[in-house]
Image (tube, rainbow, N blue to C red; front, side):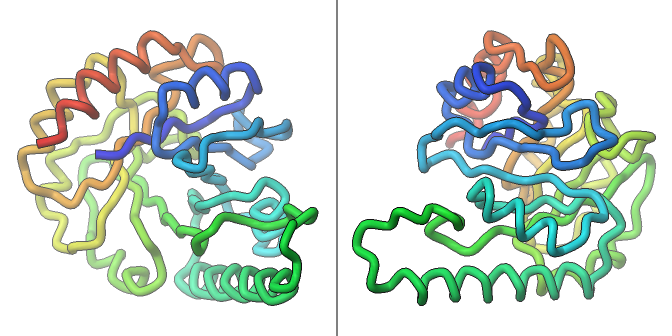
Length: 235
């Protein structure tokens, strides 16, 4: 079971959370968010993937920020169409291939203006409340690496509320997904329960339930969560 800590904002706090070795750190590039990121990402372990969160953003801006921050993954948290996702994935792959070709002869790369060793992962978010039509996911299956299920609410992420996880019992696909939405220490038992359903849950995505202020994470609570849930999920 992987762990993603989203809504990172402050350099020192990013370093503290990174010391806990989560699998992903999420950075929200959305001006309407209280956790909108505009700062500097400190150097991180290569084992930690940097994920950019975008909401109905122009593809050119997504690509620009992927390159500027060397993002490993893109989370699409808006109403992005299948065509948008398909074209973005294609453009990211083309940019990466171009970069590799241009730098083939450079042994010591001074230019760090591009991404990770692997292709950028694409995660498409869908909001759920009390019900969901999983047929809506079918057109996206061939174009995303993961889905992410979050609570449908006023804000695009960081609502701090949990949706009805029993809806996921009807999830019909093998495509792995991130589980998000109001996950905190009080949800440990519920997380352990849903883990027993043999669903393809790839990662847990936590955010506002572990904050002392928007964008600032409580390190001790995150540490407890990782021990009680993530480590115990390893069979």
